[in-house]
Length: 422
Image 1 (cartoon, helix red, strand yellow):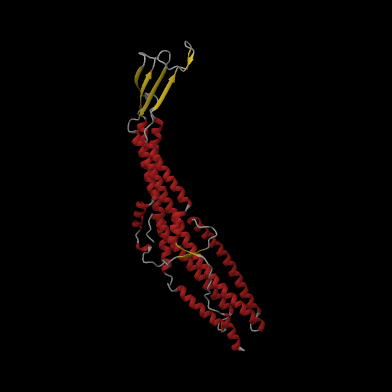
Image 2: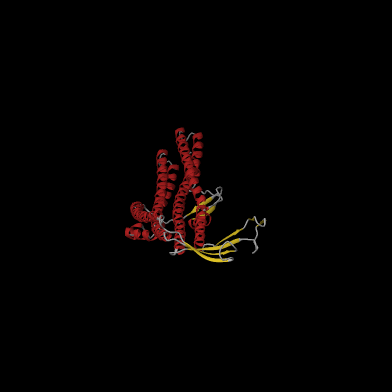
């Protein structure tokens, strides 16, 4: 009878790692980044803004059009005719006027437009930086959440087989009913945790699909190489090196500095606008002037007695002061954020370095041994379930630690504007 029971238990305990297959599209981080650059709606919208700003440069380069005016006699009461143009009894006047901008206004307007276009390009680069960080951090979070879900599938599958075998043993009177209840309770708890993890994973994958432009209904499976123990670590990079990289490569900091250039260009334009422009005109008058068939040339220029563009000049100077203040604020913000992220990355990296690299594999072997010991009654059900829970907690915590480490490194990439940790 003992031999029979042992055989039944051994048959019930199949290999701990079960295979779960479902047709899905494998998505690597490199694939996700390529789809992101090609399909992301926010990037596409900002590209249009960049093209729009380039059109403003074309507009700034154009010269003012000449203005043509014409006036004709409407009604001659002597001849009782309308719109006469004859030399004998008609009258009309024609003039053409061209505005000439002085003080280099056109070239200054071009520089303003070019700087504005440059700023739109920087905004585009900063948008890529921000969204790429969101993409990569979400990818790693989803990848390790997927590993958690695979673990739950393995645990639940093996526990279902154990429950089935236990119910058979209960019918034979070989085990107590309370043992079956404990197994059921643990199974239901795992299934509820599995549902929660699945919801979290679905939400993360939904964000990935939105960032990459994939269809919401597409089934994707993530594939990421294990880089948590790579050769390049945060500890090997001094903080001043990272800070120098951030000051040179951060698009938002570069945008603030370019904003100062833009404000200075606007001030140049407003100074030029304080200088009046000249309009030159050429006039032909059939009979309304002396002599008849009068041809004249004229020049007009506004006199800057009251309006010398004082208000716009003051606004431009204030904008320069505000731009300088924004650069100082942004530099302080970059330094503070980077320092905090650097310290956090060092801590999580130090914690991860204490984890045995063979930790996961050794636990797999341990659980195989635990199942065998339980099937031969060398350990009790309570001991088995305790080790079972310890196994689950240890693997999920390892996955969480790995995800946090990769996110910490991606945060440093984001805050330095580089790809130090590839």
